[in-house]
Amino acid sequence: MQALKQLIRRRSYPRDSILASIPTAQPDNFHHSFPSHHLSRLTPKRFLDWPQFSNKEAIAKERARINDEMKRGYVADLAEIKQHGGKVSVANKVIIPAMMAVKFPDIQVSFPDGKTMKLPIRISDNAVDSEKSSVPKASLVCLSFRGYSEKMIDSWSVPFAKTFSNSKDTHLYKVSFIDSWFLCLPPIKHFLLWTIKKPNQNENNNTLEARMVYSFGDHYYFRKELKLENLLTGYVFLLDNFGRIRWQGFGMATEDEISSLLSCTSLLLDA
Image 1 (cartoon, rainbow, N blue to C red):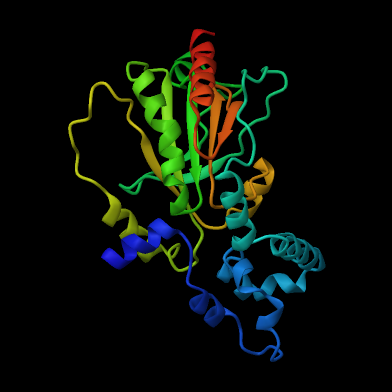
Image 2: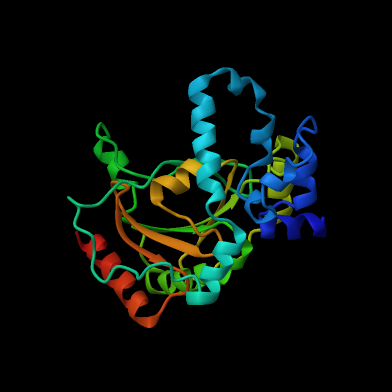
């Protein structure tokens, strides 16, 4: 059980297991065409989806994806981390105007108790007043693709939770991505969720509860839509009640960036 916990925290898959899942009926130099540091980005299960190769459009799409993923990998991500500590970009200083804001892509997530939901929670066009009132005015969604970024996420979520502890219109989600095909198998997935499920504890009344959720499966197109390349850094997005991105931050938070996040959140709550 301890080994599985360590594996889910890494949220990566051993290279030897990945290579073992690739069909062996390939030329001798097949493995040399896929550098090891790129393999972590290619979901092993995709190599087994042979029926899709009868579709020319699927072949072209898959080839484009592999070429894109091969352009960078763990080495490039680590080089960026060493260069600027995961600060791939500077956080917004002011709130993004509603007319210029883009919508956060939908993503299915699972809670440790097995329940699932779709993020973000947003007001739909045909929602009635009672449904609108249940949608938070501001949601901070924190994304972590590898365990390395957990401290980065905490640098944003902890001060955010303390500041808006008494706000019922504020939600905080910490999303961990798990893309290993083995860990995504239903029995393994349910077991992992069970192992990380914590008993009910008395929450600190002075702290906003962070909802820990997990996204299982391939996240390539989700990342592409948000233009997320480095899997070792942390990403945080402040969303309004329509699911639009009104502010975003990266890597470790600075005091000025935290101040900006809290200010933009207050503006959404007062709107």
